[in-house]
Image 1 (cartoon, rainbow, N blue to C red):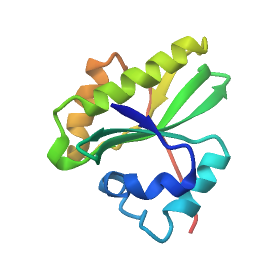
Image 2: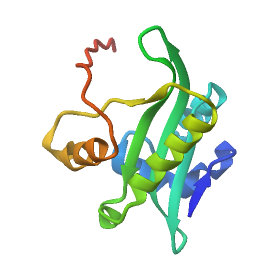
Image 3: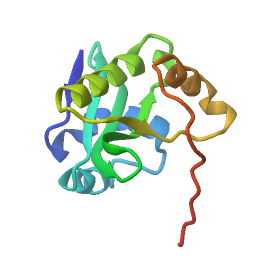
Image 4: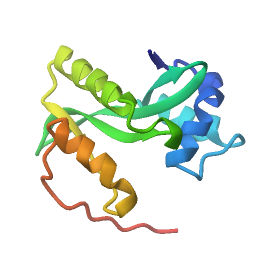
Length: 141
């Protein structure tokens, strides 16, 4: 079953799966970090099995000269014990369905290029994503 976080007060129920991908998120900052992002257009959906949030997907609507109007997937992660069961695939299908229904031009995401992400890369390729560019970044702080 796919569920949607509607309010920052609901975020604690997805904390373990969020932390599996984003260890900097904790009980003290999840509401301010993700809640603040939600106010600026971040959407969080997740799968649940037996009361456990097993996988999550965070995305936003975006518009670019190069891509057009798209959904950009910021985060997609699954708890280690639940990987390989189709949860991330189901979340991506929901995002694809949402993009199609709204007449958007596509779905985009970036993924780290480390061996720990290779299973995710296989999923993305299987779901029809193409590797279209390198992502360059510089950070201050």
